[in-house]
Length: 431
Image (cartoon, rainbow, N blue to C red):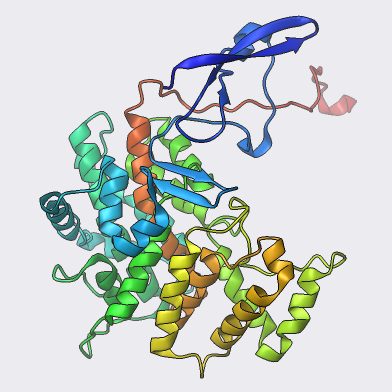
């Protein structure tokens, strides 16, 4: 915890209270209200916790006004263009970029834990074929605690480490198997001679009847999608993981809770919403009509995938993702895919329109990642599971940080109660 060198004064009914303030290494000052209720008998009211810091952290920092996203101090665009996903995983988990030997050891540990317990296939086969892959992932990840008993004791640092590696390693297999089950194809087992992204693509798209060779351009694009979604500070799903873990729940249950929260369309479904918008537009000739609607103050319609609720300038992840989108579309083409044709022309039209640039409504990471996943052949139902694969390392890093925090307390938000006051019970005959 940072040193308190400032204070704020709160006046309630003529009585003044002095509240300590903390100055972070980056970002706004924070008023410490931990003793507010004890001192004043009052709570704060902050729906959505948009002005409340629920923890202190050293993992990820976002400055939405500047369009800045840092992992352990490193800008995300540098990590996405110069690094790869497992190296970023190491950085998030342990705080520093690895040496060559450390990275090799970490990659080996992850690679050797990618297989699932064979009995876990029964979980996949126990649900309907038309089940949403996220429903399957919530159940399977939560059930991991029934199979991996030797890594559920959160008081044991070694078990926490084993659980962390297992979750990062097995999540791509779980997501790929959810997809395979959904489309009625056989499960494909992981291979230890492939890198993380290539292994995932093979498990999704290979079939036993023929050899499958992963294209390096697609593998690199997949790796960048994972990297750019690895962590995003105290968002809804990360806060859910932290709240679940504050009760002492095992790591698999906590990550399952994060997946459940991510499933919500306001959180993990943004790139799916982008693709649905492109399908609604339908053909490039209708783009001017939808742009005009987006610019009309009296029309509630808005273009999905443009601007960001956190980044008020530009999404720092979008530049690198655009490069991958261009590479994938050059490789696979857009001629026979009307959705991708609309995407390319909508991007060009919006970037050329002063209305969007003046309002900082640039294409964001969800716009480009949706284009890439569509081009690769993923159905929109798989977009959020892929997000969950990427975000697992962020959830785990935040979970490990919280478990080690000496200030850890079970989460217990307060409320502004607006219901009835004390009432007397009356029996049914007198009502």
